Every structure is written in structure tokens, then in C-alpha cells.
Image (spheres, rainbow, N blue to C red):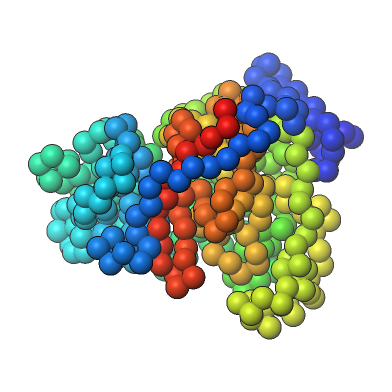
Length: 369
């Protein structure tokens, strides 16, 4: 077989009985030579703009940026030019306070919606009046993730739908996981996809292919479980909008993935354990899916190193970018040590971790069109 049935193929063939299929080549609309211009940066070593552990970033209709900082237990707002407006929600148990903010989105230009894992609730905050309304989230839905101590995947949509990746039992180094969504008023949570992940000491090894999920405001995207570079786009009701494939090939295993990396940050026990594992027959072509504020689909090619925190993806990663229709736009690599958070138009917002674990939010513009 050729095409998407073979992860390393140079061709890409896909069919759909309803005609909603897009076959992409390596040629897109974007020029091959693109560059970045930094527009602004907040956080870092500036004590007046402290960020401890940013969990999520959302960009509003007017360009304002909201940051859910898990470490500070605060939600912080910046204006479109990166000017620090300060915390609009701080640590506490009141209606307008948070304990463990894990996700944030904009309902409209003046209203934030925040998922608080610590308080098992959603808070809608009106920024003009600072009034807040609270919606309880089923503790049975949030507790397994909160108790695990690791939020592997979380997404929040403006209609108050919450998406989580649930941990599961581990057998012979494979963990059974599931992507589940919860919505107010629904009696049953919806398991949209099950995932079988290769793990070591409970940490995902991204080199082994598995199904991935990306969630936007109006759509969600799922990749194939067997590693084919094929994705399916759904609307909010779960109807298929389009299926598409691409000609990309998997990157070879890195020294870290082979257990040969001499990086001191990787413990010796980890390195030995990785060396003892059988290598994947075909390494994963993609490792993350991000649906941006315009509905475009950013597919991350680089895989995080074994044992590295990968909630926000690999630093300096290459991304293939597609329209919601499935048509390929082009590929672009992020600057070193920066992880994709959000994008709209030519502007991209990233997370930068400094050498002393200080975090910055960076706004970049794509240049070269």
C-alpha cells in the first residue's frame, strides 16, 4: 500500500465516501523561507510580571491575552500590545477566585471562562464589572486527572465544554487512556477517543504512534492511531467535516529517544530504561495538534524528549499548518526554546522557559509573505 497507509511514504492517497477528503502534497501557499519578528514579551526575570507555571493562554476578539497560571493560582490579562493589566482572578475560594486554573477561553471580548480543577468548577468572569458566575463540574469527571498530579491534556470551549485526557491502567509498559468531554446539563460524559500510549515510569514516550486530539472553539481534530499522517476534523456536534492527509515523513529517533543522550537532565536510570526498550517499528510522524483562534490546524512534527514535560509541546518545533478545510498552508519552525500556545492571522503566541525556569509569554509575527 502507498499513501497515508505508510508513515514514511512520499505519496498521500485518501478517499471518503461522502467526498469530504483532501489529499495534500508538500507544496503549500506559504513561501518556503519564513522568519519571525518578536513583537513583545512579558514575564521572565521581571518581578512585576511574574509567571510561575502558565497552564493555558487564550486570545480574545480584540487581541487581549488571558493567562491561566497554575503555579500562581491567578488569571492574568495583557492588552493586545502586551501591556500587563494584572491579575483579574487570584487565589481563593470565592466566586471570582481560583485554586488551580487549568484552562481559559474568551466567551466574548469582555467575558472570560476559566476551568478550576482545584474547585471543580467553571467561572465566567465579566471583566467590566468583575462579577462572576459559577458552574459546578462533576467531581467524578475532574478528580481522576487532578488526583494523578499530571494534566496531560485539557481544553475548554466557550460553550463550557471541557475536554480531558484520562489516565488508565498500565500493563507491560502500555497505558490505556481516553479523551473525554463534559458539558453542563449532560448526564453522561462522552468518551470521544481511546488511546494506547507507550509509557515509562508513567510518562509518555512520544516516539510511539498513538491517536492525538486538538480542540478549537468550534471544531476538534483527531489523528490516526497507527501513525498515518491522516487527520479528521469534526464540528462541535461530532459530525465529520473533512478528512485529510499529508506527505510528511517521521523524523528519525533522536539520541535521547535511543537512550544515548548524555544530557545531564536525563537521569541515568531513565537512560538505561529507554535503551532497554524495543524501538517503535515506525516512529510517530506527529506529536501534537493545536487548533488556533482562526480554526487553522497546527501539526507538530518534532517529538519532546523522553521524560520532558510535553503539555505545551517540544521547544523550537516544526509545525505543518492546515486550514480548517484540510488544505495545506505551509511549514514553519518556532524559535529555539519556544512552545506554541495560540495563533491568529500572522501572529503567534509562545511560551518561553528561561535557564532559571522563569517563564515568558512571547508574541511573534510571521514574516516573509
